[in-house]
Structures are given as C-alpha cells and as structure tokens.
Length: 429
Ligand code: UD1
View 1: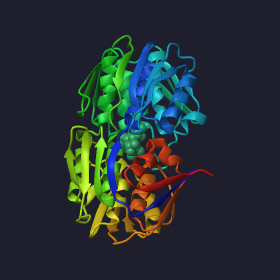
View 2: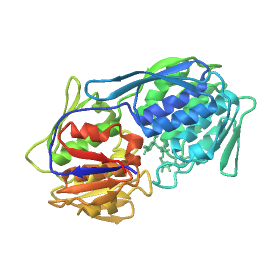
View 3: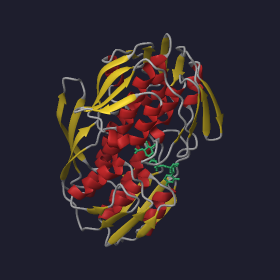
C-alpha cells in the first residue's frame, strides 16, 4: 500500500495548477446515462473515483474514449472524455461497484428516468457518518416512482414514466438535488425542487443538462424548476475548477508561509473559505491566471468556523482548516454541522502534537508552537489531506499511510507540492 513521506519545514513558493472538480465531474459523467448521444466532458480530473465511476457506467453500457490527454507544461492533466450511452444494457448497479463510492448511487436518477426501472445497491463511500438515502427515495416517490428496498438494493420503477411534481427537501443534500434534477429532466410536466442544494457543482450539472436540451431554471438558488422534455441530446461541457482542491492548497500555503499562484482557481466558488483564511492571516488576491495566496512574517491567527451548505464554509475543508488551526496563535473552535462523524483526523493530528478536544460536534483547538513529524493514518479523503497540511509544517518526518484515500480526490498531490518546494515523496511497497 502506498505511503506519503513528508519532511516538514519548507515554505511553499510557485504555481499549483488546479484540476477539474471531482464533485462536479462525477454527476456530469452520470448525466451521460440520460441520452443515447455523446456527452463530451472537458477538464476531467485523473482520479481513482473518476476511474471507478467509468467502470460503473461501463457496466450499464456506457462507452467512453479519452482524448486531449495532453500533458501540459506544468504537469497537470486536462482530459477530455466522451461518454456514449447508446444502449443501456443493464439497469442494475451491483454492490461490488457501488459499495466503493457513494456517488455511484446517483445513477438511480437517470436510469429510472430513461429506462423506467433501476436497481441500485445501497451505497458505501467515506466513513463519515451514516449518510442515508431517504431523501433520494422520498423525492423519487414524489415523482411517481415505486420503490422497494430488498436485500440491500433499492428497486425503483416508473413504468409509465416519471411525472413532474413539487418536492421540498427536508434537509439540504447535494446528491439528492443532483439526482432529482436529472430524473425530472425526462419527467412529464414541471418539477419544482425547494430547499435544493446551491453548490457550484449543482449549477455545473444544470448547465450541462440545459446544453443537452433540458429546461432547468434556478440552479444555484434554493428553488430549481425543471420542465420535462421527451429526450436529451449530446453536448460538450467543461468541468468547473475544484474549489476544495483550491481551498486545500490555499490552507497549505497559509500553514507553511510562502507565495503561491493557484492557477485556474475561481475564488467565487469558495468565498466563505477565503474570507476565513484571510482572517487567519493569509493574503488572497485574484490574478489573471487564478488566485494568489501569500503568508509572510506574521503567524496564523485563530478563527472559529462552522460548516454549512454552500455558500457557507464547506465541510470538505473542515479537516484541512483544523490542520491549519493546530498552529494558530491561540484557541479556535470548529463546529461540524453536515456530517455527524467527521472528526477522525483529530486523533491523527494529535499524533503530530496538536492539542484538540472534542465536545459533541465542536472541536476546540489550542494552537501549539511546534508540531513534530510522526507516522499517521489517512481515514477519509479530506481528513488525509489535513494530515499532509500538518506534516508540511511539522518538524522532521511525517508518513501518511493509506494514501489511496488521497488518490480518490487529489490529482498528483505530491507532484504539485514538490514543485513548490515541499519535500513530499510517495513510497510504494
Ligand atoms: C456531497 C459531496 C461531499 C460533501 C457533501 C456535503 C460529492 C461526490 N460529494 O456528498 O464531498 O461533503 O456533498 O457538501 O459531491 N442525507 C440524508 N439523507 C439523504 C441524503 C443525505 O440524511 O438521503 C444527509 C447526509 O447524511 C449528510 C447531509 O445530508 O448529513 C448532507 O449530505 P449530502 O449533501 O447528500 O452529501 P453527498 O451528496 O453525499
């Protein structure tokens, strides 16, 4: 199993290219199931989760081809991938495939809308809470689906097709918003989704669906209206830049000090996190090519944050921000409101000398002057990168074990950091 070895202490200086967003690429890829035409996606990141979803879509009959796989001078991949679901050969998504990645459950929406039937295993994914699928099931039922749960599978059918309706999410869910929006594009009549997720990835998907001929309005606001159409066509769509990767590297620079351009980053996609980082002492400015993050001289200031759905501070940056706060000049508090079990990084950060105590959903972090390198264990995708951030500022050597979590969501992490002066090395046994 691969490990990442970090020797801390160096500042980051240089350019880090920001990849396409994993969390946008996945639903866009799944949208290819809605049409027998070709959906071409540009700027698809090269990540384990993307490869896994390609396998899952292949099982349903989606052909794909990759081009534009040009290695840019800066070493980032920018892949263009064509997806064609000419014939859906299988409407079942089996446990062996779905259990590895929660987002693969989302195929239920397009399969049901196009084929009138879908059988999808209950999902797996990061161990960050129970993450049920009740909202997907309630919402699809409101659109006229019959749904049963049997032997670990969700069996959905809508023989006469889905029918537009009004659905108010009792709780904001990114995935359920994606799924109901996709399903409603091919339903009869109008669907109104209220209390919908407003994340930029939802807007990217709505733009994609509209480019395919759907009629979706209001994405990016709490109310999304979808007028059903009888069929969708192909389209060419670009995956937005990864706001979580952007925020992660911005926090890494805030942690080590230095001066880095995050090339291709879009600050509008993570305003709340950037404001917080500014309060913590980083200077952030827009440049022609992206965002510039600088921290010189002065130390890291403690800032309290609470995770919220977009446009609030994202839960996917919570662990990284905690990594940063471990070295703040004072005490900060981080409250997690989205997932109930998303503090697994706390114990591992403590191994590096961090002083953190938990009380319910709030972590109290007393900043320390020095962290010291140690072997640590990656537990989930975002938690593992918080250990990298801490390791970059720890004295001596930190080894992050189980880096397959990182490979799910961070494209060429060690290469991007090394090019900015960090000492980071992958060790394959
Ligand atoms: C997506 C992101 C993930 C991010 C999360 C919140 C992708 C691939 N993943 O995950 O990185 O951390 O949004 O921003 O885009 N819930 C229910 N019932 C449901 C569905 C969700 O109770 O049927 C709960 C979840 O347990 C969680 C909360 O709603 O507590 C938010 O989850 P959701 O927004 O659905 O997260 P994902 O879409 O899985």
